Amino acid sequence: MSQALMAFSSLYFATLLMLLGSGLLGTYLGLYLAAKEVSEIWIGVLMTGYYVGLVMGASIGHRMIARVGHIRAFVASAGVVTASVLGHALTDNVSIWLALRVLTGMAMMCQYMVLESWLNERAESHQRGMVFASYMVVTFLGLVLGQVVFTVMPTLQIEHLLFVAMCFSLCLVPVAVTKQIHPAPLHPAPLKVKLFVERIPQALTTIAVAGLMLGAFYGMAPVFAKTAGLTTSQIGIFMAVTICAGLMAQWPAGWLSDRLDRSHLIQLNAIVLTGVSVLIALDLLPGMALMVLTSLFGLLVFTLYPLAVALANVHVEPDDRVPLSAMLLVTFGLGASVGPLASSAMMKLWGADMLYVFMACCSLVLVFRVRAGAVTGEHLVEEAPLHFMPAAGNLASSPLAAAIDPRVDEQAVADQMQDDVVEEEPATLSEAEVAAADADQDDHRPG
Image 1 (spheres, helix red, strand yellow):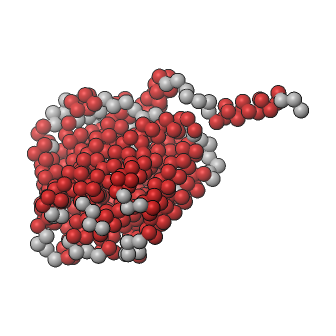
Image 2: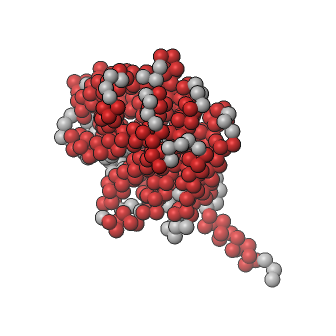
Image 3: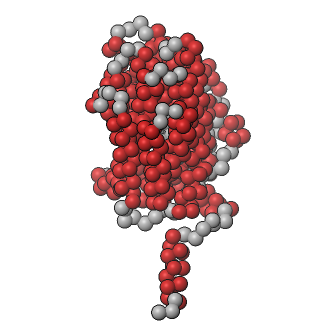
């Protein structure tokens, strides 16, 4: 297994640097704008712009990869993100920052698509579970390290932006110098909205609520922590503890998920999550208790997404699991786009504590909406995979992640890719065809 992990080390390292920079940038922007007394609504809008960019990038990314190839698409995207990050240092105009956040989201989604299609190309069938789980762990680790930077650099200065720019510049190195052959282009699967709304309404509701809560957390939790009196370094610890708890909860949640009814687990999770969110909002406990509560919050909120994905997979036929992956990610992305905006509006009107009142309201929806008794089992698929896979639940993946997710049948992925290739006319010649054409022209030029 260690040899297999080493084979993917360059791609994992690129992912780690990307998520480190992304996690640091999101928290930095929230803290910087709060220090400048910018309206909470604008802070929420900026995070919404980032998630909107991620959702838009899924369509743009696959077209870019098909046109110029994986390495060139990754390098171009890393350049766009680096320039966007440095653009924040040139002006404090939040309208320009919004455009930069959308660009960052679009370019990062393209990077995710390159990395995931590459992992799928190099992963053998028996490695897919390990490859997918390791990829998710690396995303968690990158997000945590991004928060830890604030304990080393507590003063909000331009150095943070320079560090983020360095991360995105360096992440292209292991991809640009690779000797591996370009993987075949993958195409996002079509959305079967009506089918999935009818078939897996509880899973989709859970995914949307997870998006609302995690989008609000990443965007507005630093502002809440600052208002609560935490220093910059303490805010970094606050965020890191929450994300670490989410990582640590993946394996226990998976063990329970494979043995107990998943609808019941989601409902129980939501009940406890509602109580924890209310306790944080009331702010009645001393400082150390806040760290304990936020770790419980992370433990619960970061397991909603993978529990819902596991619930959805057992009610969908193998041929539909590729479009299912796209549907779930789009649903999460829409929730994550609304979450920061809605929570920031509540914080603006009634105070920073409203962030966790918003969280409690979201989880309360699941308490009443997700019930084991409402699952009829009519569409239960006998050959569905039972295993639970860890998931970061922050759109640190693309619809192409279905290709390396062991819950998705490999033949279904191949069939879907073949259908897409047949339906689409090739936009340009491949790099190999261009090179062959150039060589042919050279042979026919007069000496």
